[in-house]
Length: 82
Length: 142
Image 1: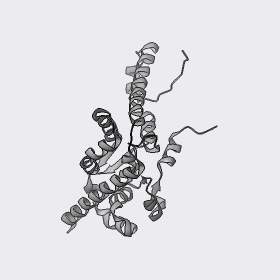
Image 2: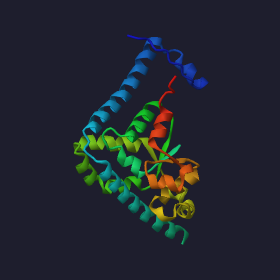
Image 3: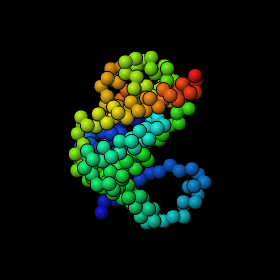
């Protein structure tokens, strides 16, 4: 396995607490956090590859959302500022 | 910090699109903060059935993506930028349905990430495309 060296900047108080952690434990911790994040993204990407939504339909729905949102903001502005 | 509009949010549900790559990469790199006007998700939820039907994703897959986007986009309370709405409307004139995004961008001194061409024409200095944000996130080519 290839070794990658990571440099982190942490506050002094935290650095004191972290000093006791071994290099091996650091490696396991960072590896796990990275793996969890990457696995989540990979799963979402796999799902999205199957999406049948077209650009045209996406634009139509976005437009409807904007109209609803704009209406809400107009009402809120009138209610707040008269 | 960038304002995300509905165009970008809904385009994240397209297969092979640029917007979702922006959010995925930023999730790993944490370089940018994305914000949106309050009630955006309320309005998205009103079209949840239609979106789910169009994507043909399973309910769980659809929910996972929406949950991810909600985590990545911070909603800003309307009262924090509502006073800028008239200024935004004046700038956007014929395209007022996007005024809440511009009001938020003006108040927070940020740009709006959108693929909406009309929006870009009306206030180019306040717009950034998903492709441009993606280029910012990707490592510089040596």
